[in-house]
Every structure is written in structure tokens, then in C-alpha cells.
Amino acid sequence: MFSPMRRAAWLLAVGLLAACGSAAGGTVPASVRAGTALAPSQTVPTGLGGRVWDVIPTNAKVVALTFDAGANADGVASILKTLGQDHVAASFFLTGNFTTDFPAQAKQMAAAGRAGDHSISHPDFTTLTDAQMRDQVVGAEQTIKKAAGVDPWPWFRFPYGAYDSHAISVVNSVGFVPVGWTVDTLGWEGTSGGITVSTIVNRVLGSLRPGEIVLMHCGSNPDDHSTLDADALPTIIKDLTARGYSFVTLDALRGLGYQVLTSDGGVHSFGAPGYGTYSLPPPVTGAALAADRVTGGYWVLKSDGGVNNFNAPWCGSLRGKMPSGTKVTAIATSTGKGYWILTSDGGVRAFGSPGYGATPAWLPAGVKAVGLAADPGTGGYWLLKSNGGISNYNAPWYGSLRGKIPVGVTVTAIASSTGKGYWILTSDGGVHAFGAPGYGSTTAALPAGVRAVALTADPASGGYWVLTSDGGVASHDAPWYGSLRGNLPSGQAVTAIAGE
Image (cartoon, rainbow, N blue to C red; front, top):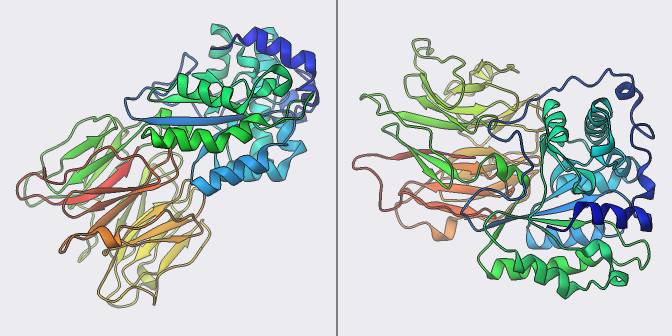
């Protein structure tokens, strides 16, 4: 890795970060300077504390493209255009001052991938007091949430890559996980520093490994005004794709891959860690599955309303409390903690999470509630009905398939995008996007007699996976890790898929 101290000295010398303000004051929000905003609302996700992550621990061929934003936004438009054309998600580490100076670009960057916290004014954390470090992290989080509309938690990048073990512990104390890089492209040195597009591409390819984290920058060099990282991006994406690599955001540090649930209660892990399974006694079957994004574990919803928890807290169930004549149809993870259980009459029961309403009184005769998805933006949820309609609770409504369901097919699942909006899956393999980007369907690829039964978003890439009744998994702008096709346990059916 390029020397953090040499990098810091060079950036300061040329004034690349001159717009960033002072270390402990400057544009730090008054509430933070007064000490009123330092209590963290989150904690470090399980297993991610105590270190700086410079590579995603995986054997999967994935790369995380990351961009630091601290001085200017000269390369932003080009970067976002390339990412959009190639359907690639990236991570953006924003300083609070950049977000204040360029709110429109900050909002666009957050929508194009994953936002991270890069401090307010880009100081060297090894020179700050504990209070100043906390102010920098929490103050930037507040600013980013207000201007860009997203929470950068839990990802943080030390300015200049300068840190020590104590700085890591302070950043962890306010709930954030420090992220470094596997390779620095050196694009920030510009053409005046002897760097070219070829230099950047060769550095990325020369350090290539599963889980590589690439450091790039959004701004231009102050001497020659070059935006070499933006210029090199199309070739980087092309060359990595040709080598079989997919692209993820830093959310991949919290888990990669997916789990597939079979009707006997078996949880089969692909690319994601497995935390156990449970053989269900007939006639009870595994009905639905939800991942716990805090712990990396998961919950299995059983047909009797019970919930089995694996490396995830148990918050309650509907076992013995099912409304007469109904069945459980879905379980969804709250964006905070806990989960919701959906019953076929449209009831949404909250366990360890807030409840925002249900639809029992509003379901027309013959219509059932079949799917449930949490809105990561508001903490609310969407309920999918068998007629293709959507009911929204503390979440915006983007549209539905009511009156538009293809002839001869049924709606089978709903999944929320990692950005905004949701996708609806139909049994013919169609994925219909509402307020979210569409990355394709499996309609033309389904063998005769095979149905699409479940759908889940990939929080790391922004794409999604479709589970088919033969145990197959189709990936759309998401890495493929395997499936149960040809390996389904005898007499069992696949019922759910959950992305880590």
C-alpha cells in the first residue's frame, strides 16, 4: 500500500484538500461541537471491529470500487455516467464539507452505490484528541444524512489513510468500521505526477485478488486539473469483467452470497456463512427466510408460525397464535432490529421492531397477502397482494402490477432495492421494477414446468437473485455463488432465498 504519510504530505503540499477546513472546528455542526450528538445510534456490526479492512475476506471473484470525495467534484459526472452505463455499484467516502459544498453530487453518488463517512474536514486522526475524532465522524454522519438523505454508517475511511490502534478504537466506539484499500490507483497524483490511465489500470490489475478494494478519487488534481481515475474507470470495469469479476459495495464486508431454504427447514448457504439448520417434523415446513443484517445470521419462518433463529436474536413468533383460516406467507427484516411476519389475510405482526399497519380489512374477497419487503430508507414496509397490488406502510408507493399481471402467471415475491423502490417477481421469471433500476428477468430462460418462486436483493452489488422451483438461482447484476439445481433433497421444494 502507498505510504499514508507520503500521501498526506503530498496532498497538503499541493492544496488538494484546502477546501476541507480545520481539524476540530471549521464546519463541524454546532450540535456536535457542543457534545450533544456523540451518542452513537448504532454499534459496530458483529465481527468487524478492532481493525482496518483493506480487503473483503472472500474467495469470490468480486471487487469493491471506492471513491474518496473531499476537495472538488470535477470527476463526479463522468464517474456516475460510467457506473450507470455499466450497471456497476460503487462506494463513495464523503467528507462533510464536500457534502455541504456539492449537495446535488453527493446525493447522486449515494444513489449510485453506497455512501461512507470520510470525516468532516479531512484531518490526520493521529493528531486529534478522542473528542475531536468523535466530532469528525459523528458530525460528518449528520451532514451526509441531512444533505444526501442516506446514512453512511457503518463505513468510515481515515483521511490520508493515517491511523493507529487507538484511533481505530475511538472510531469503533461511535459505531463505525474503518475501511482502507488493497490498492491505491495514484490517480490523485495527476499527469503532473507522471501518472497515466495505463498506470492506473495496471495497478488495479496487478493487485487483483478476490475481495480487492480499489481506492480512487472524485476530484481533479489541483495542478493539472486531470481526472485520471474517472478517465480510467471504463477500462477498469471492462478488464475486470473480462477476468470474471463482479462489483460490490463495501456492504460485502457484512456478508456475501445467499441462503436457500428448502421445505424441510434446511438452510443451504452459497458464498455466505452457514449458521445451522433444523429438520422440521412433518407436517411443519419451512415457509420463509430473512437475513439479519446486523449479525449476519438469519431467521426461518415455519408454516405453524414459529421462528427459528440462527446467529440472530429471537424476538417472538406466531406459533399458537395464528388467526383462524390463515397461513404465514412471509418474514421481513426490520432496518433496525427484529422482524415482521405476514399472514395471508394481510396481517403484519411486529416482533422487536415497530409496526406500521396491516391490510386485513382492505383485502378484496379472494385476494391474499403473499409478500413483504422492508424499505431501507424509511424503516417501513411494502405488502404484496396476490392481485399484484401493493400496500405501503411508512414507505413511499411506486406502483404495482394490479391489473397488469401477465396472463397465466402469478405474483410470487417482492424485494426492496438497496437504493429505493422495489421489484415484483412473477411466476414466469419476470422481474418488474418500481422506483428501482431493473437488471433483467429470467422469463426466456425458464425450462418448461419451472417457476420463479422467490427474489432477494444483493445488498453488496445492488442487483438481485431469482430462485426457481428446480433449485436454480439466476443472478442479475449480482455475483453467482451456486444453487441447488440437480441437488434438491429428495421430496423437498425450495421455498425462499435471502441475500447476505
